[in-house]
Length: 301
Image (cartoon, rainbow, N blue to C red; front, side, top):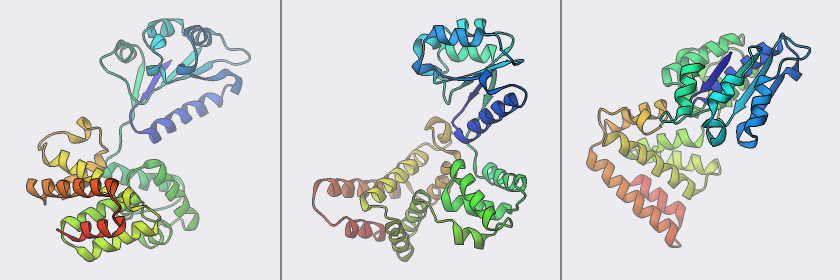
């Protein structure tokens, strides 16, 4: 069996790898499982590993990582595949392949491909509901979406917060989320930018001060504002384009930013980018009070 685990969703890809290992170890001993970093070895060792017959076990499993950066191995992937014993399960774990190269084309043709893409908001919410149920807990779709809006779309972080919430009370509610889950800087920065664009000065200041209470430095806040503006510009000036795929952005982030972009004109976006660029230059080139400067920026529309 030759299986390729790939895709940008690290959480789900790692989960799949753990499951494959667990299934293997349920009937085989741990000495029959070998993990090889292709960037730190040579062809000889890899071929020896995949060709070896199992000892005191029915099968062997070889997990090969980072093959894309090991050019000598990638260029000769056929040799590895042909050397793989019938009693060896070869698992290739690689987040991203260059689809133009023979490595990808050969594996696509000769291996079982399992691709793990980032979830959009709907998929994330459904996953949270199902994951809570799996752990003998409950969370509604509405509250799952609220949790996502509070900390973002990182599944590893969502998994950690879900576990914390379940330990507090298996019946997860918006109240328990507010009590235990502090908003992450990245998700609050989007809210801050939305408040700026809609002219809600009081809300903008509240969100800025919330960032500072989280010990986020003014220049770091400015950097995140610029990143959000960058995403908005890509969306605004590329209508009808699959922005998430072409710009390699998280679909959830794109969906939220698209909603905000629809309320802005191209002139609005250009003006904010120009103001942000000027302020960023001043912050980096002169001794101005960063707190005062950024607060002025977020309250002036």
